[in-house]
Image 1 (cartoon, rainbow, N blue to C red):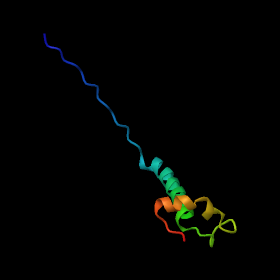
Image 2 (image 1 turned 120 degrees about the vertical axis):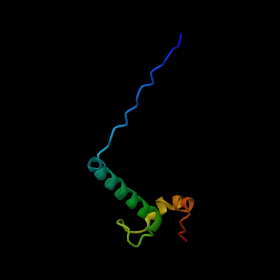
Image 3 (image 1 turned 90 degrees about the horizontal axis):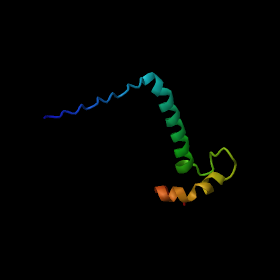
Image 4 (image 1 turned 90 degrees about the vertical axis):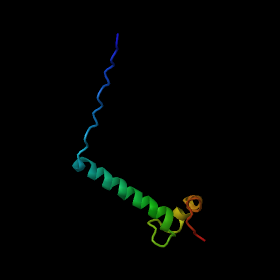
Length: 69
């Protein structure tokens, strides 16, 4: 008595690049904006006047290794 077990085939769906490209561009843009506000914004080119964004992300800047003093 030999038993054979059938292994189900797993089909990996193909994702067309044309559908993925707009989402990749959106994620890249959001990541670039976040990186700017965390790393480079010192209040000189900030949209709100003053250094409010700098103070909000101050501890995160040090945690990520960005100097700000």
